[in-house]
Image 1 (tube, rainbow over the protein chains, first blue to last red):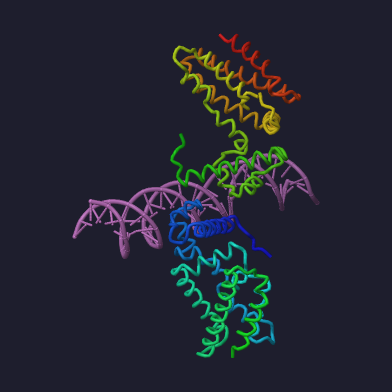
Image 2 (cartoon, protein in one colour; image 1 turned 180 degrees about the vertical axis):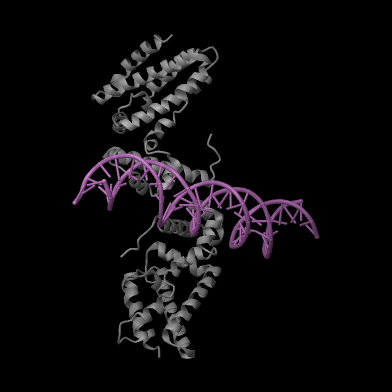
Length: 198
Length: 198
DNA sequence: GTTACCAGGTTGAATTTTTAACCCGGTAAC
DNA sequence: GTTACCGGGTTAAAAATTCAACCTGGTAAC
């Protein structure tokens, strides 16, 4: 199951986690702009060049958690079971995320997750950078769906649907409701949104 | 008091401690000969060449705790208060070690310390290597005491006295007595031994 | 008596990290 | 308006570490 972890690979992973965790912790505590990369490097006990070797920009220190899901939509389409249409596969995948309260669906009421989302959505430079990630995701999904303008349109539609659904879920939870309470609506919303896709 | 700890120095110290601690823990658990340096490197999460960069031989993995006291006798003589003779200074220093139950005096009943001493005294290659450490200590002390054969003889006498005293203390404790109970005898023994030095 | 393996220890190249210095754009001081 | 500092980000060289391979001396198998 797990790869033959050499010493080198294991330590790199640990370093990366240490930097990412220290960054998110400090950002949540003091806000994105009030924390310098020097602070993060110091907290992670790493030098500044090392920090930038793992994360090319300050924004990526936050967004690496989304980056884990990079290209996921395209993968879902490519790996779908035979006989299942692309849209159905994406719908099912999103639904599964809802059922396990995956943070990317916005349907998660752990305080840390909520605070993290607020951080991302209320910091302009982060939202901007997140849009660029999304852009790449969109291209990958388009390629998985086929060629030409139709594939690109469908890819864009799917991702925008997911973004709207996630944001709606998050807002309800930010308003104080529990993830469990919101779940039925979230499922219904997804039903509606995916249902009206071409 | 503390040095300006750069990142590099701090990590080196941590690595050294990780290796040394892992080694002692494994040796106490399974015995010196039943643990390979590969085991230690793996436990400390370090490669074999790195291990040997910190500790030149397997024996040093145990004896680095004595190495901290390297040259101590010479230092005591050199740094003694004015008006105090070399022998008096050494006697006082040993007595102070007794009073604070310093492990090097043998007068310490913490299970880990006792087990550690047993490890050293019952493993031939360790005893041998410890003798070499002691040899260097002796030369340094001789230089601190003066020149010529008389200084060397006195250095040897002092160190042999310390070794005998430490071992006597350890044996009483290994027999089950507490350090506190042994303390008066230990002081008296030291009085006697240092008193009969020329 | 080969053969093979194991443990202590070494070697050289490749990778990673630290260090200290720098660039650049912004902004506060005066 | 210049000077000085701060934060994001980069650079080149030095130090540390991993990796894979090797050497050597023992000792177990056969």
